[in-house]
Image 1 (cartoon, rainbow, N blue to C red):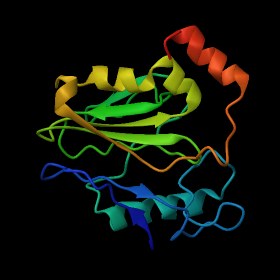
Image 2: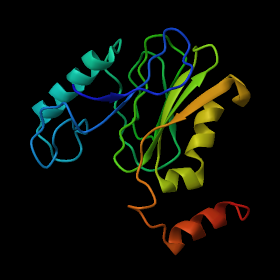
Image 3: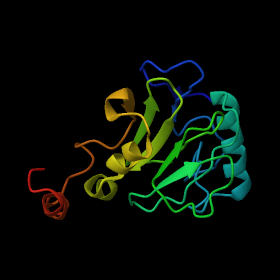
Image 4: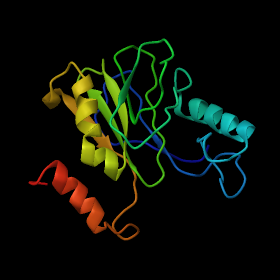
Length: 179
């Protein structure tokens, strides 16, 4: 794999974090090349090989649990047992060796870590999830106080490529008129 984006933040020992780009995988166009999503129509074996490449390149202790992201606010907690329901947009764990991961294209990935590294999380933050509180729900999963949690905002679409329409503003205003 040719490119991982490594967050520039003070991670405690034993905690790893990264974001991927499209480069360094085996998927053919239009998925080229490091497609990690099994839900977009890519060849199943290519996605499997790309996911294996990620684990090796990032030095992950195990394969991530891949969520069925729905642009909501639900947070799944990883305990070592496979969660029964993977429909969620954030994942949290306080168990050593668990890998919290989300997939994004245009949406914002947000990685979280407690000051001591004993709690970690990842959130998929599209505008609907942001509006309805996916980040707040993710922080609420932590036993650490919010002031003891660091967050890293990963790569996402910017204002030059995405125009926020009046319906988006209206949704945020309906949630919080002070927004």
